[in-house]
Image 1 (spheres, rainbow, N blue to C red):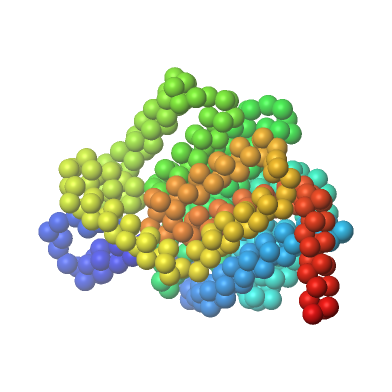
Image 2: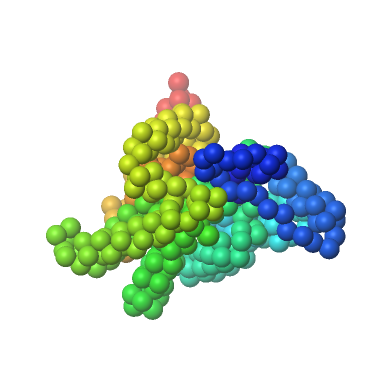
Length: 408
């Protein structure tokens, strides 16, 4: 369901005769034995998520900022590293919290329930001491849950705090920008960690291919910007994984093959009746019908909206904070921040997140949630590589400065 569905629905209810095809589709009602009870239950769930959505998002943003800073400093100055582990894990388990929270009673959809479930999940995953195993299990749970939810009709995401907004959202189907960044980052980490655990590469085409399929299929993710971001981010990862250069013919064959498959899906969607097309099919239909004026208007509108959100959205603070902490972290850690395989997957996450930012109308949101998951993984992996000599020198200078101030 999307906002463009209102016009054809109202026209059908008023029995207006259409002189031209409408963009949206007519909303239909499904008969049920107890309509009033079902409507009341649905209304309660929609009201609960609408009331708690903004506060939970605010808490999520606050937890990211506070826990990133506290986790980085804790990893440097605290001897008990499990404390910083737990702090950073609070950030990285939140995507799982918000996607499974609709499974619980409505009473737990409030801030108190959100915090309680997050703390419990963080405590459980912190007990898995090996970081790669911890992130592999967490990424698998998030990725599989999102896949199943898209296939079964978005039964969880539409009642999730990072899902759609029934009050103000532009659409009510597929995968939104909130979960797009998390979906891409978890897919990349899951693929990479399985490859390292099994010493094989069989998971790469399966996981990444299924991710692109879910994003592109009209009845599932239906996320045009996600297709572009996922394709480029995954292609970068595969190129680095196989040590391919840009001139490698296999790389370009993969690009062409993937492009043809995606075009075929979009073309099939564009051939369907207008009332069942997704925005992917509509956009491709405009291109094939050479309606470049509307195409340019759509592109201009998305760029304008993205720029406005970049300036005004609180999610931009998460992006800026990740950049600042990345610089601080590089200064406080050993010369080689990550192992080469960690660097590859982090770079792929960064590429996918950046492309998400550029091609989506609320791209800063997708970029921020991608960093919230991917950069938290980076913090977990490098917190034990802090240069002790650099910290010792810094502490010595601080003590000398204090002694000098006291003598004055």
